[in-house]
Amino acid sequence: GNSVTQMEGPVTLSEEAFLTINCTYTATGYPSLFWYVQYPGEGLQLLLKATKADDKGSNKGFEATYRKETTSFHLEKGSVQVSDSAVYFCALNPTGNTPLVFGKGTRLSVIA
Amino acid sequence: GAVVSQHPSRVICKSGTSVKIECRSLDFQATTMFWYRQFPKQSLMLMATSNEGSKATYEQGVEKDKFLINHASLTLSTLTVTSAHPEDSSFYICSAREGGATNNSPLHFGNGTRLTVT
Image (cartoon, rainbow over all chains, first blue to last red; front, side, top):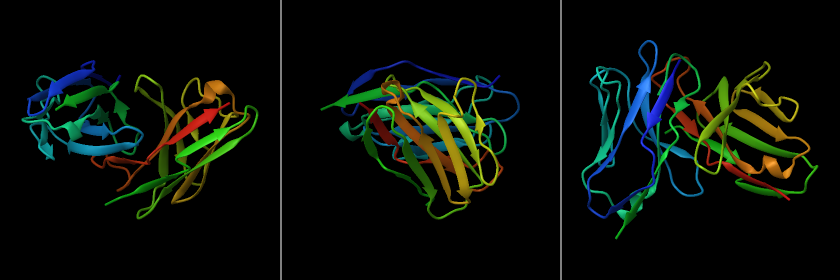
């Protein structure tokens, strides 16, 4: 079946630290991969996506590369800010107009 | 960009009453919308797939008579929590995909509804 596993949090970093949130997936076929961010009290916002192997999605200084050989889509940012504090979800879409399969989310807290 | 509007953002109701949550796609048509429930430890649970003009498809373990879904138009889906109880208190989030039946298009999410049943 399809599943997403992401590192458990919470992750606490100092401002300007390097961020990595690991995400691996299991899927049949060729899924599209996404990272979503959820700020406190809000819904989910798309952060970035990649639709095929070796694609790199990037947005707001975050990036993730679709690695088919390792079935991974790790999220990285070179220098985090306090405003990046949120919950980050890795997700995949197996095929067509189907619901996303989500990881359990990783809470990130950035302290000044 | 694509926007999904969800209303209300917060509702408090008494046990035994019903609550309706609306989900609208503001600048695109959505034949399919998805309803999720988010539990305290962050995890998102897909409740049902809402299909315009036909019955919703519910995930295993979700009571269809308790969580009524109506997808009356290409831009509106509603979730009604009937005879709500305190254990129904949760964060409910709707989503829709722009672009139809391809897996490349991301889901766009509403801002969620915090339901508290007293």
